[in-house]
Image 1 (tube, chains in turn red, orange):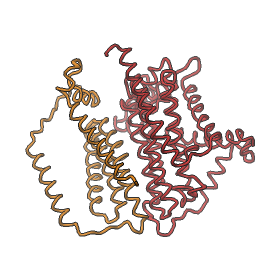
Image 2 (cartoon, rainbow over the protein chains, first blue to last red):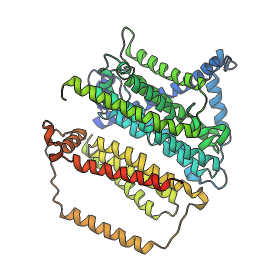
Image 3 (cartoon, chains in turn brown, red):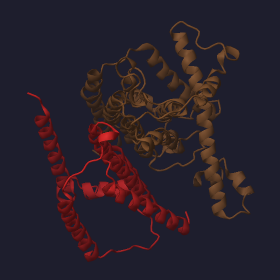
Image 4 (cartoon, one colour):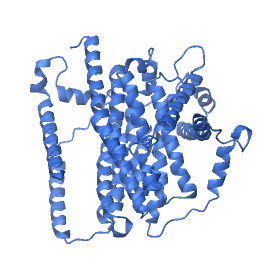
Length: 343
Length: 175
């Protein structure tokens, strides 16, 4: 938060203007403004994501995708939103009503909260914590509680099975995800997102190609998307943990998934692709462009690969991805030690 | 952050932590108890933040709310849905006895420790550095590694955990 108020940062002129107010009012104002901006950013991105996903995957499967609502179907997400908000929202018999209604919120909140530490441009970071990466990992590990609550409270065997699978999958793939980021942290020597971007004169994807691959695989799995979408494998589980959800409550789960995907795309772009750094174009354009590349990569994977089988998924995570990630960390640490001459 | 803000945050968090922790032991529904436990862990992480221990707070959320509590919840999910989650047994008296014993021990330790409060605004060493120093002892002397720091106890703990894990796999194997 102090980051916005610092001189030279984006909020500094506005802070100057509000100087006559007591400091806690200014602080509160900027806190609310920052939260509003983050949520606005996420909302716009979600609309674009939903349209892009359907259109891009349509193209990859040699069909048109949505093209009825508005010019080339651009108003399709808006139409979807209106449709889903007018749907009936019900709670199944025998469900634990309180937990059932709380679950979508619990699953959405962590996905939004991680956006606080992302460096959008050099001067626009809402809270450049010195434990930025750890904050991201810690907060995103809470998302799974929402799924579990949904699966258990629905009083439906498919929901319960879906939730169990999702816990097993997310806990398994969290380990390689963290280890893949660890390689970068060893090189960067800091967990502060802003400094990690500043330190990338060479993007870390060049120094950590294996780390990047592991990150992409683990990140796709963490967000529960194809080819790792076993938690909602419709041929086996109807729709997984959100089988019993309808209307706006379902929409919140859906939005949580997309927000989470946006978050892992931003982390990938920031940590491996040097974030806002780049020649000629302004930083925010580089940032948006790199996030878009990461997002396109996720769509490409979804359109190309069939779904894993559940035992293959676990075997791949524990027997292949984890050892490779550990070896990557080991080799990186060794090279950093040798280069810095401390060994 | 101003002092008043920290004080207000402390009282709000204290209410959340105490309320949720009492709920953990009083609610009949085991799944609800596990969820209250998560809330209590997150509240404690909040208390760490008011103490400017951001690293500890993040680790608290990652390990306790993100991993330990998830394991509890996972086990509780075997209760087959909301209708059978309320459990009863006759262990109230022994449980009370053990809890009282634990409370007495903790209280005794707390009362008998001399708490040195450092009120000087000196620059605080960040937690990762401190942990590294404690684990590895003084940084330069490689020979002192095992003698001065806590590397040996740390490794022993790791071996113990590994043994427990192997044991669990052996017990869980079908053949």
